[in-house]
Image 1 (cartoon, rainbow, N blue to C red):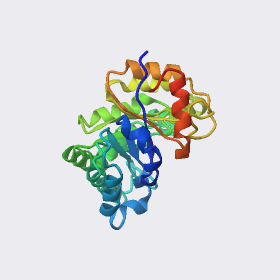
Image 2 (image 1 turned 90 degrees about the horizontal axis):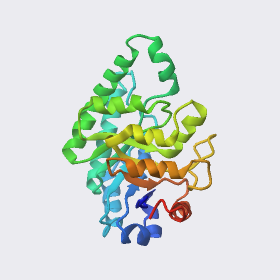
Image 3 (image 1 turned 30 degrees about the vertical axis):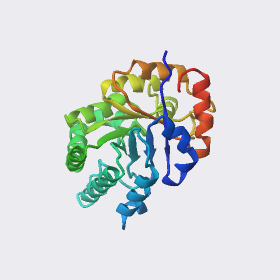
Length: 271
């Protein structure tokens, strides 16, 4: 199996510390500053321009992690939903300003949904309708700016539910993200399939992967090798993927990026 080139998630202030490794091989970069609500309030353009300057010379693929704190694309509150839409649209503008072509957003699905949607006829349809009402302007804005929204599994116990939502938009501007740690945690706590099944289910819609390790108890964001994920099966699924997703280490501490990369490199899985 040919090793896969991987990059990393980091804050603008951490770019300089990893610049040679990221820039010399044009690795995928995901900027995570815009998770913080404060980054999208006030003069977000100045922040985005500062990040763009820090990325000067980088020729690889770029993305951002969009906002999610307090933001639910499935909110049933008709006064809150427009605020969610507006915040996501602003984040897309920030992504476009710094030359990012992807924006990560969080899935709204939970184990409760899996168990209870069939118990309440029409619930699945009403959920999807609400999500479309909130997200259709966001998807349209993403298409206009040349940004792809990638919907990341969070609590999802069933990857097919999230895939069906993405497919329902019938747009190239929305695709799937898989977080290896979130999938592994759901496998242990909610009876979800293992990580490689999440990746294979996504198929050609897989556009982005967060690479992190954990122990099956909490969302650790440890470097690969410090948890219990079976990395050969993960990278076999990635090698078989018909798409070419962004592959980025998402560590709790940016200083762990070299150690996580070294473990995967030494296994012959990453380069």
